[in-house]
Length: 479
Image (cartoon, rainbow, N blue to C red):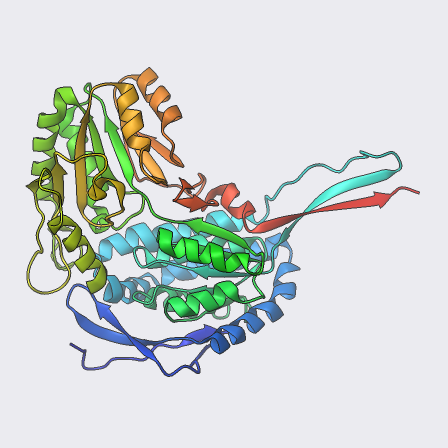
């Protein structure tokens, strides 16, 4: 189904919206209604090359600005984001069906705050102090921008993930060619529009397209770094493509986050929190709780409480304030989640949920699955939907072993009233983030990123900023 007026989107290159050379178009579908709301071009390798040339030409002038000048530009951009919040919310809502309040609070307002953090970080880069390490010479370290960076963002948090990419890159003096997800490009294009007159032409370039477009960015000889937030499969493709020209890769990939729940918790309070952190954004969050590991002494009680909480987390049209989350993002993903739940092994038990909601849009019930085995696909592989599994454990050692026994290592949490238990388990959990008696909360000052198949490199924090720099040693003779 197509709306009365279906606009054709454009790339943003060298400060202007331009029509790419490729003739192929992709339908942009509102997953809440199934309606086609726009069409996006599939940019070709030639289109990517045009964007790379613009970014390369803009690099030296941008990099040679003082950190204070770049900071001022980013602060102006943050102000403009807040001033254009309504337009950003509507642009993203058309592509995701997310509740508008969620987009406004958790992406637009949070994004403006994070841009301000990166603006400050532009003036705080540090290195080893200069010194005479060899007699008759002085050595010092320069921390420099990498140059042009290629970036690919996902569809689950389109605007915020664009901020995570562009913020540290721009703060450190790099220029950008970014491809948003092929299903959710409009809020990123709105960000580009907002940047006009604030960022110099060519500093931020947006190219639309599909996987082939992303591959053209990764394999182009110009970028010194490519960064992606996406699936393990996509991350492997980026790492492989980047290796062809020995460019650096920055990968934030999938997750299979456990919540390790000990027997001393307040069961009702813990179940409510876990439901919040599992079903937020329809579970389309790589840090979302997907596996609940609970001590055997409270297993049945927690399952009952989780099932009750799941039933309270309604899904449906975002205009209904009673709905906690919106649809799954696209028909392919919806079908994948539905198939995974329908293909459970016979021993698994669906405590609640497991079905499509309504006959319009891609809505899926909050789902709690018990009696699963560690080897089951639903435990081992990312579902990326409103689906959680529950397993019991008897000892702390067993809990840690089960938690770590997946290929993902992005996020986790431990739930207990005992401080020593919390400290031991947070030490032993093999994940890039461990929350204690909470989950999913992020702040600009702290790093976010995983281990193992969840990728490498950090977003947010000064660690994330440093990932967009390179180190140069300069030695000068004193004679």
